[in-house]
Structure formats: C-alpha cells, structure tokens
Image: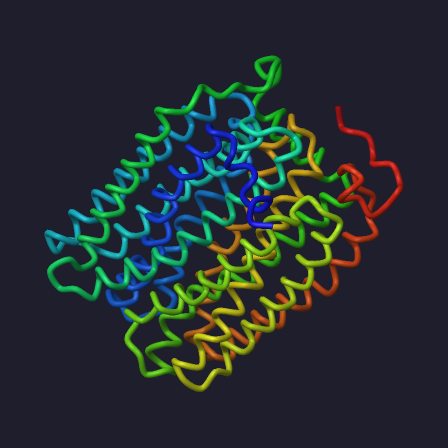
Length: 420
C-alpha cells in the first residue's frame, strides 16, 4: 500500500520536481500564516485580513485562464522559473519593509496581488508538467502526490511561521527572509530538470482561442463540468473560512491571533494523513465515492469549528476539516486529470485554480460578514453551504458519462465529442 501510494516518485524527474516544490510550498503556507497575523495585528479587523487575500484572488481570477493557455503553449520550466523568482522577490521586499518598520496594509495587498498573478501561471504549468514527466498509468498517483506534498508543507509551515513570529529576535521579518531562502532552493532544483515541451501546433492558434477552447472542452464533458463546479464551490465556501479564524481566536476563544498557526497546523495534519491514505486509490473506482464523503466531512467539521467552546476543543474539528478537504482535493484533482484530454491539461488545471481565486476574493466579504454577525455564525453558515453543495452535486457527477479509463468510469455511456 505504501509503495503504491508513492509509485510516481520512482520517476527521477518527477521526484526532483516534487522534492523541490516542497521548498516553495512550505514558503507559500508560511506566508498565509504570517500574512494573516501581520494584517490582523496592523488593524484588528477581519475585513482587512480578507482584503489582503483579495489581492491574490483578483490577480488569480483575472489571469487564471490565461495562465492555463500559456502552460499549454510555452515551456513549463521557464514559466516556473520566472514565476518563482517573482514570488521570491515579493517575500524579500516585504521582509525589508517589516525590518525597517515601514510596512503598511497596502504593501501586503500589493504583494498578495503579485503572488496571485504568479500562482495563476505556476499552478497550471506545474500540474501539466507533472503529467509530462510520468506515464499514463502513474498520472493520477503523481497528481495525488502533489497534494500530499502540499498537505505535508501545511503541517510544518504554520508551526515554523508561528514560532518565528513569536520569537522577538526573528519575528515576521525573519519569517519572510526564510521564505525567500526556501524559494531560492526551489529555483535551484529546477535547474536539474529537462526542458518541457509545449503542445505541438500551439503556435497555429491564438492565446484567446486556446482559452475559449479550454472552457468549451470542459463544458462539453458532463462529468468534468460538474466536478469543476463542485470543486469551485467547495473551495469557495470552505477555504474562505481562513479570513475568520484570527478573529475567532481573539474575539471568541480568548487567544492571540498568533495562535492561528496552531489551527493551521491541526488542519494540515488532518489533510496530510487523509491525502496519504487516499493517494493509492486515486485511479480506482472508489475515488468518486470517497471524495464525496470527504467533502461532507469537511463541511460538518467547519460547523463544529464554529460552535467549539474552547481553543483546545476547536483543534479537533480543525483536524477533521483538514482531513475532509485534504482527501477531497487529492482525489478531485487526480480524477479531473484522468477525465481530461492531455492537450487540455494546462487549461483544465487553470480552471481548478480559479476555485482558489474565488475563495481569495470571497474572503473579503466573508471577513466583513464576520465583523457584522460574528465569527461563529459565519463559520456555521459556511459549513452548511459546503455540506449542501456536496450532497446536491455529487449524485450528478456519479450519473454523468465519463471519458476516463474503465477503472474510474461508472457509466457506459459514450462521452460527448471533443470541441475539436
């Protein structure tokens, strides 16, 4: 079982990319923790935490489809190098602003916008690159392992970030300089990888035409369409809770916002354990059922987070929330890739990343709602919306025709024709 869970790591180029990505992913999740703490402590408002996240969301939403089309046209290696360099520079400059006591909220918003823009290009390019580096039989496992790496980083990154912020001689500035170093390590690892290849004949089409073709392709595949819709709504409702958690700690649980790192760590432990548990079934008939159940678990856990009476007790539903969403994202990403034509991987992946843009945009109104009606009620509402979404859409996915290999298909109906 363990061997099958990590089978794709036997492919050396994928292993290099996977291990190198741990550095940048660790830095990314460190930044979400430090950014939330710093922004809340600057103003004391949930809305401003959401405003910083909004910067990333707007950039990713506007540029996401373009990033997917570019990933299918240009060198994925070059895209990763340029995007990672830009994020590294943002962390370095932010650290310098903090160290010189010149940081303002607008600096965090601007840095968030740049990171959202790079995310729009790096995310689809890296996922599509993974598909290039492994064979068809290991494709779903490789995508699942990407989620494992993400959840692993989410385990230690909040703890590292929270610990650094709490130590006076390091503080937020030291945390940002550490993120800069981690991105540098990730950049160096890319030098060991072979050049990637664009899709043949891509130059014969316009970028806008490729973007439209990608959306049209996704819409014409019923199962793929419903899976993308479910993923978008799940991320939108579930992850926008991030904007509320620092306020929940200070206003309801009598803890400093610095404790946000502990909530993130509990969330990440659950996500890591769940993604490890389901990685080996990413290409099996059970994947659709398990990921639907996991989505319901995540929604219910969010409701429990809203009603937990103490900080110690709230750690348990946060662990369950991480487990539910970790398994859901791992299997959803793997099955979506299996349901897609290889020529469209970059563009389809960019549509999944639009979900993260959506949650970042939604974080601002969610933060404002928490200021108006309280953090607890806001979390309960988000959890109820998440649960209802899965219960309504999962049956539609199960009944829809599939273009996946027989192991994943649950319907014998033929798939609709490709838009090409």
